[in-house]
Amino acid sequence: MVGLLLVLFSLVAEAAIPEAPAFFISNLEDQRFWSRKVSEPIVISFFFVDCLVCRKEIPELYRFLKTHHPHVRLLFIDPLGTDTASRIRELARTLNVPSACFYQDGLGTIALKYGVNNIFPTIIGIRQGRIVFRFNTLSEDNRRLMAKHLN
Image (cartoon, rainbow, N blue to C red; front, side, top):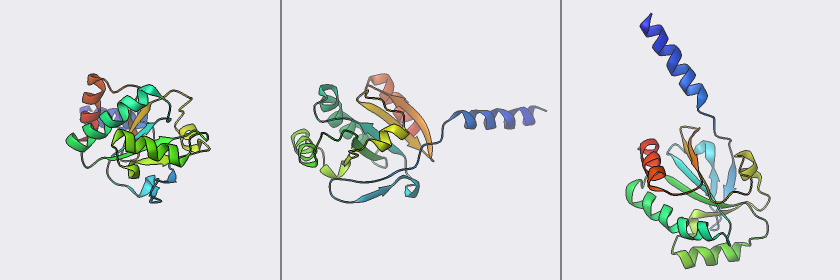
């Protein structure tokens, strides 16, 4: 009886973790990314060029993941059509983050799939095709949450 309850609990817990919507996008270096073809964890940070909080957190998030979770794929996705590729490249250069980490989704279709409604930054973690965290700031508590789900 206890075994059956444990199985049911694990099925309910797994069903409570939402499946991540699939998407296809190319970065600023024209390298294609298909979310369903990636086995390692993914962190997506939705941003826009003139977002002051984003400008602060992009290099922090990049350094944190590169240092503590180098196996994690990091995508900075700009969903605003008004931000040009050249402005995003300039931002990458200014922040000293590789332009290969930056993606432009001018129509905002990926942000819509993930329910990002003009709240930037929005940081989402995906592991094994499921969303494992979502937050809007890179606080110490959220760093611990990321570490828990990305290891």
